[in-house]
Length: 96
Image 1 (cartoon, helix red, strand yellow):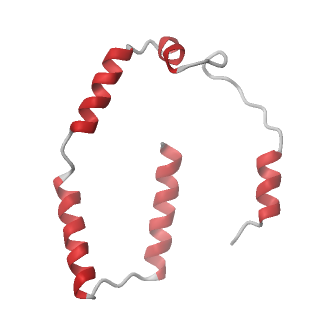
Image 2 (tube, rainbow, N blue to C red; image 1 turned 90 degrees about the horizontal axis):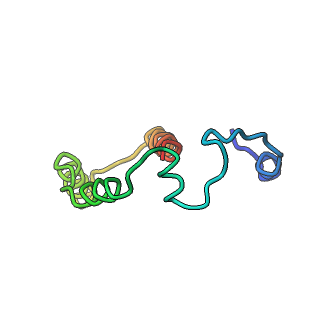
């Protein structure tokens, strides 16, 4: 099923009642951190550690295996697999 552009625009422009779970709008990241009792230095350090972490070795191995199959010409993807990948990507985007 495909949703028309018109219906998408109507959904996006429809007024929505939103409750502010954090008690109101914040002006910057520092205010948001204060509202949730987050130490900015600790958050920066955690982000830095996460960015510096080595890539998942299983993922890297899977990518190498797929690259080899593509190079050999025997990597075939079916329509159902593409739909499955798109659905998982949509779910992952919502989680972010």
